[in-house]
Amino acid sequence: MRALNSSSSNTEFTTTTPMMFPSHISLVKESIRLRFSNDLTLPPKRNDDPDTDPKYNVIMGNEAGDADSIISALGLSYVKSLSAQQPNPPEMDTATSNNSNNEVHTPVPIVSILREDMPLRRDVVNLLTMAGINIEQDLLYLDDAIVQSTLLGGGVPTTRYSDADAMNHTIITLVDHNKLRSNLWHLEGTVAEIIDHHTDEGFHTTTTTPNREIAFSDRTALVGSTCTLVTERLQRFYDNETTPDPTTTGTTTRPVDPSLGLALLGVILLDTVNMCDDAGKGTPRDDAAIRFLMTCTDWKRLLEEDEPCRVTLATASSDGAERESSSSLDSVRKSIFGIGVDNGNDDIVPDRTMLYNHLRDSRSDESFWREMSARDALRIDYKRFETSKLIKQEGGIKSTTNGAFGLSSVLLPVSSILAKHDFGTTAVRYMKETDVDFLGLLSFVMVSNARGGDSAVVPSTSPRREMLLIGRTVEVADMVRYLLEDPSASFLEIAVEEEGAGSLLSLDDGWDYKWLAQGNPKGSRKQVAPIIGDFFT
Ligand SMILES: [Mn+2]
Image (cartoon, rainbow, N blue to C red; front, top):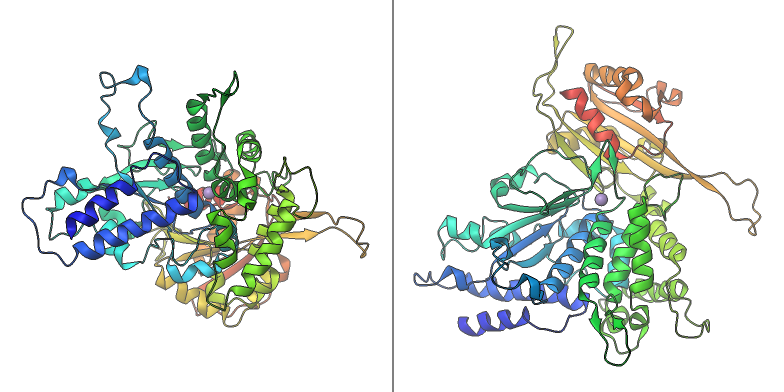
């Protein structure tokens, strides 16, 4: 029984024809499920040769688990599996390829959030569904039993291996962050690769170039999206893969799988605000990645009736509740690809503004955010940061901060957040739950500049950022002074929001809040987090 499963899972990963992206993703999950659900019931086998057992490379994004974190992990897994299928180029044959890191660890992407939180990520759900991936069946989530007990439990089942062997069987690749979250810190020694665009927190220093790619320098992200870094790897793979085409005198490159192309493109557009200059997120590297995906993806295949992804699109949500969204996705897909419009049939390319608008709207849908509970608004895009300072001494007053703070990104104006039922109590409870003494809400909304309702005129919009700080009274006052006066914070152009002067939020004694306007819309959490972190150190 075991031999059968073992050999079948081996052949699944050595196929020579590149699989579709959705098939790859669901097959990885299925093979993990088959392997571990059977093995868990088996008695220990002393004579197993650990070298013949599969080794895993768990690829995971950050704990906020936005579209970039989730899809860069899935995409990197596929790109890695493509590369592993390639034989060594001749000049790098056995004599010179002595890189022991080439040992094959099967990439296993996991969604770095709780399974129950996925429906809150409406942009991710829509994008993955359009790409033909079933978010309930095809994906492994952080809190799945199999992930907790095996992949992130220190390795494979301990009945079968010593701890050391188990560690050797699982390595971790961090995408879209560069420090393993604290509740997985026991796996710190297994982090083998980092692909990220946040400020380098200086951990896991055994990872070195090319296994440590952190595209961030001088308080600036060099790419707007980790998916751009994944796309660059995909492009390098295709650059190397160009093969002679016997039917012509030139060479041909297999086009990019359309499900992968759509997923990566969607995230890069979201993260760069469709390369909008005012938002200041996109860089030339993002632009190049967008152009590569637009031109080198086999878009036509996404629309062919008999393709697996096409079928999935029609049947992804067979369980009633989501059936309606499936058919509305179908019409979205039509608008993005201009189906029904005779465009010569040869140059089917997604309308990137349509794609961006659809994803942005599904994420920032105002009624969705307005109806969301205070707790969900806090946790939908939350990150916790730790600083080295555990006790802060200020003017002789010993504050009780533990130096950890949380930042929630929200897509509602602060005024709407404050109006949520029981927001103050909920926020303080959430701070205790996540063990932080200081919480920042970072609000980002697009405000319309257009006056009047002339539908022929495309309304212009501009980004607006605000902050809401909650913490101990002394801490909040010090933080506000620091943000207003310290030169390192000046580029954020912080001002006190006068509207918040009154008592809009009732907090317990010793707690306070402050509502701030941020003049510079380009300061996102990536810029704000290091500044607030500096305050505590
Ligand atoms: Mn990112």
